[in-house]
Image (cartoon, rainbow, N blue to C red; front, side, top):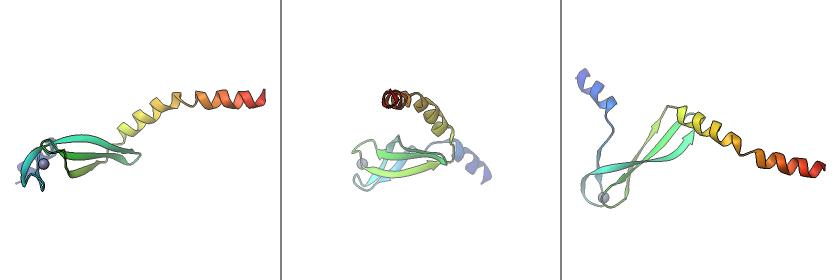
Length: 86
Ligand SMILES: [Zn+2]
């Protein structure tokens, strides 16, 4: 039994029951929300596109990666601030 749980942790949910198709279909995983506490994913039916589920990761590495990347943009604010002091 424990062996089953171990393998499940490695696998992504590839097939979820879709209420619209009335059958289990492969799903598309898409990034929905990135939070400091984790990353939220959305599962959509690959056949009809209906949302069939979601998952929240407790991995915050994605948030820190985006946060550090967006740190370059405040240069626009610096320019505006220096203009007002001029
Ligand atoms: Zn569907």
